[in-house]
Image (cartoon, rainbow, N blue to C red; front, side, top):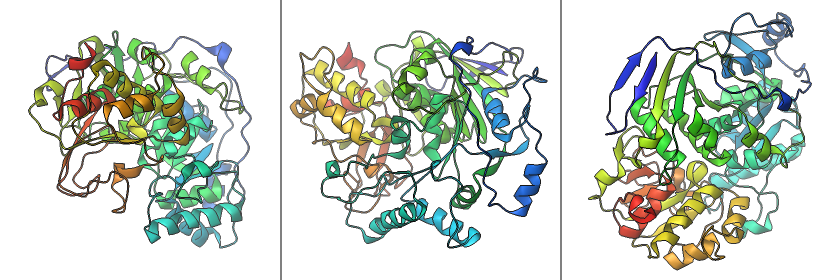
Length: 510
């Protein structure tokens, strides 16, 4: 099924054409492909798992029997099979497992219950532990969760535990990183062709690197900690072809809000969402991360963008681990295809209380707001703050509502204070934010994106209206159950901060 999507209005209908299922995806980059040797998974697994492993056939290097999508190829490699198809249930080896402070304690508890109090994880160098959600709070239970991570990581000698001990000054914690999904990329844990599982639904962010990345539950996580493997159902793949020159007033957040608005929050349930086209190829890595980050808001199992020169350049100074990119075959079978002419897209928002409640920003100009929030794994990256600074700079105005800035990681925080904004005459983001009257950039964490304890920075403790660069706008998501959250790009968020109403960024960028 192929769909051609217009943009005259965000409720435009789909035009179905069932003939086209076989367009090529990515030019060959075989000269950039690198192969790694995969270590066998731990022997410390259940008899049922061992039996299933013994039935595996080694991967072959011969010709492909059937064309496969990128996701199918990655899972086939992880399962050590020549091929898999959508609907297959396969045991796969996990390349990287990540957990954080809100789900880690539960996963650790299940691991110890099922494998024993003295059991060891299958590979201490493939487990990444990142406290990030409820960090800068006096809440005893939140602090206890971080303590549990620390005790476990020290006991297991986890190589990649990004600890924080001094909550009064995050800069005094050189190991602390911040939001797990951005830290995973910055620290070199995201690599093409690999399988990354994490105990957080937005683990799908890493699909921007051409890998299979998805969130799992605590029970699954406990099993992965002990075995390094998991039984997964191979998802069908939806293909999103995005072509056309990206207007300078749009960001990837607009693209994904358009997609979710078209297919709904259930439109990709347990399906892979593969993004291709000239627009996608033009995006930098952080923008691709934004796109893949919100596939879960459409119900997707994973999102994926083919690795290319942009990917390889980003990874040059971040990892020495060898990796093997894979690409969808030209004749691969896709469940359905959606086509977009991005040159015609306008800035969007998602109105309360669902990410698929799409509307044009210019049609919401009558909506008065109380605050703006720029942050999270979706909208708290370096490029997000550069975009906001660019709009503030172009306007020369001051914000009319409280504007909260929460960098995702320590590195993003440093970038805010050191990177020069193009065309600013030498000013950094922090200087532009200060001149615009924004709040001082906060300590890097998830902060108010998921509400958290009442003393969480920028939490909505009152029934207010907020424009946010985050990913979800369900009732109570950022704190108060009667709060109203409008999801938007950093451009639209910054423009709205300047007027006190939801505002199309073109009012300041053009």
